Length: 282
Image 1 (cartoon, rainbow, N blue to C red):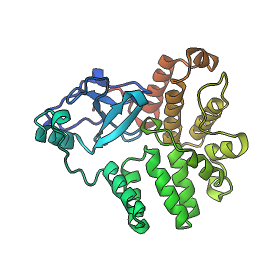
Image 2 (tube, rainbow, N blue to C red):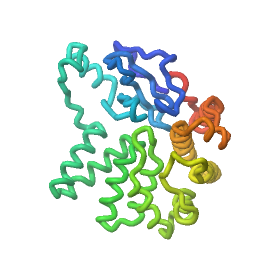
Image 3 (cartoon, rainbow, N blue to C red):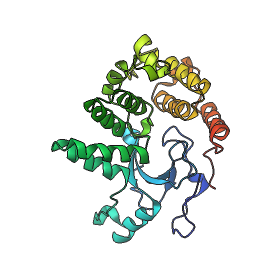
Image 4 (cartoon, one colour):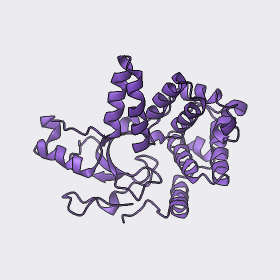
């Protein structure tokens, strides 16, 4: 993974690279500005973007979630500096206008005030910059539907399902949108959409002894690999492990899930398809 410029005062160690699924694979802990309650900031490279510089995210460990915080390590350092290295006490924010998270906030304000046409390009930019956040894609899918762009709406909804669930599990509206996309010509061979239509794939997890969503997700992973779509396959494979890790030990054993085996497999697949195991810096 491409590391921050060497001029930075912050030097994350390789021991801080998380193997996943939470914090998500590749997340690298920064001890600077740590809360002391188990939450922290860290560098993050979206899957398949290991050749790019990372963004900075914040963990919410009680929710098993990370939140985009800054567009770059430079912005993170700027935030620390204006707060005299004590941002939790001083609470001074900085501008990061072109960051995906800010673009999405502005887009939501536009939507709330009826400026729908102003929101669309902001949502497009947010998803292009940070394609793993489901809620960005869902908002975009809804706007594409409003514009009667059926295929674009279907693709955005699919991307919402295939986002990294460590940024937040997709809303059930995504399943509804994808169930309507099953007959759109370019999506008739998509495994996720067809599993939703024909086999009832949904977002219900936990509280049962068996859950058919898991074998369906694995089938979709295998199909994406067969279709030579490794990004979709690996992101969904990460989501599989992320949600499976919330199940009981007995449930995991029932589905032959072993976290160490998954981590080794995920590293190898990332190396095979992207030339980067997401375990070291370049």
